[in-house]
Amino acid sequence: MKAKVHVTLKNGVLDPQGKAVGHALQALGFDGVGDVRQGKYIEIDLADTDAGAAKARVEDMCRKLLANTVIENYAIEIE
Amino acid sequence: MKAKVHVTLKNGVLDPQGKAVGHALQALGFDGVGDVRQGKYIEIDLADTDAGAAKARVEDMCRKLLANTVIENYAIEIE
Image 1 (tube, rainbow over the protein chains, first blue to last red):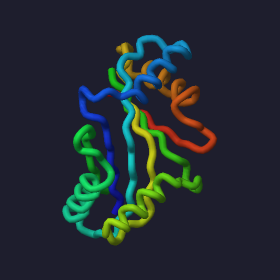
Image 2 (cartoon, each protein chain N blue to C red; image 1 turned 120 degrees about the vertical axis):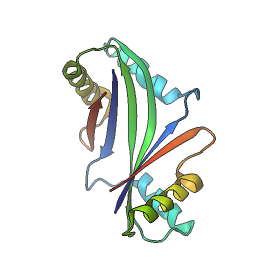
Image 3 (cartoon, helix red, strand yellow; image 1 turned 90 degrees about the horizontal axis):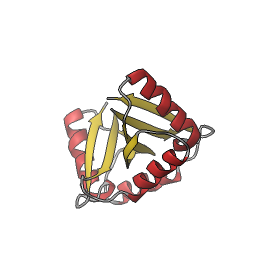
């Protein structure tokens, strides 16, 4: 199975990387660009065959390694 | 409108960041973890009101700034 994980900064946490992308887009002449937020996207191949167990394991991975839950949210899709 | 952009390395391009994550997961005791690939996830607030025009503009942003199309693919969702 494949797990797709999105790790994004929580609302209210300053995102300098997103701000830099937003300014660069404006400097390139793109108008009407508002807030830009940048996060991480991680694809993990798993040997699991049960989707529920796989999701629980990936949640564990997020809490232990992939996301800093103080400032980041994560979302998991299992395929 | 909001654009959600995924930028991922093309197949066959070495992904040291993904490899490092995979090794760290194994070191933490997660078994059955195969290939791990890490990409970028970017959310952009746009003033556009037409979804088609917004998508065309975001494609332009990807080609000019967000993705290195030599080694990266991008996927765009407009909401």
